[in-house]
Length: 160
Image (cartoon, rainbow, N blue to C red; front, side, top):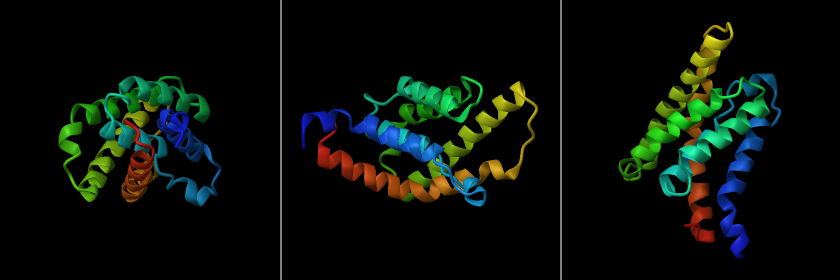
């Protein structure tokens, strides 16, 4: 593979996750949309913590705020908090099996959604609905496939 694709593999994968995050879906399916950006950033944080860290999470959280039309800083803060926790514990988390990591990703996704809800509740007047937590289950379900796909991509392109 060329040097250019290898250099931009992380950015391309996160941009694909951003597109999946805003892709229109039917209303019945939209409530179950996994947190694609969080999953991809989490993988790259666990795999390459020196290249993907809190600053990158803040930047792509800002992109999420702009794309979703939320108040600036809500997704930035929540994404940065989750990636900080993952980056601080990446050596321990890498040793877990993929299924144990899926459970941890469920906890991280629920933290992400609860922080986003809490900040939106402080800034606007929204109320908690159980539907806010459906993406936690789908993120746990999709973590093994995201993990395998991105690991294969990282190994084939020799991303370091």
